[in-house]
Amino acid sequence: MASRPSVLFVCIHNAGRSQMAAGFLRDLAGDAVEVRSAGSDPGPSINPAAVEAMAEVGIDISDQSPKLLTHEAVETSDVVITMGCGDACPVFPGISYRDWQLEDPAGKGIGAVRPIRDEIRTRVQSLVAELLPAQPAS
Image (cartoon, rainbow, N blue to C red; front, side, top):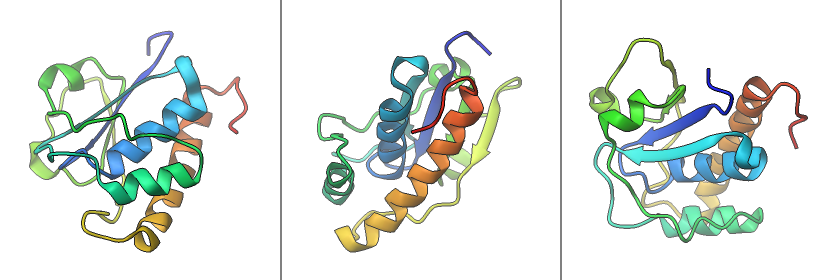
């Protein structure tokens, strides 16, 4: 793994789960990890309930926009975390893949998005502890 590991979060629309995960990783790891997110079929904009849920914990993802998943993004990542992108996720040898089974927040209100956000935060905290073992997770 490179001196600065890179992590790619992938879901279908890159509008909810992957954006929340990327927001938490940026917040927890700072510049120590290169953070990317993408979608196999990007939506038109970030899910407003995901933006609101993240704002509640002090993380602003309102400036993000859904991005199309590319082979290059996968090839140049050390860890690829999928969240329901199905067969659209390209697989390359030598890359660590993880599949996080998370409910899709699309079309759900803030009350339903909060537990998804909290589960993502727990998983990202574990990921930070794994990628940056010398640094305490916050």
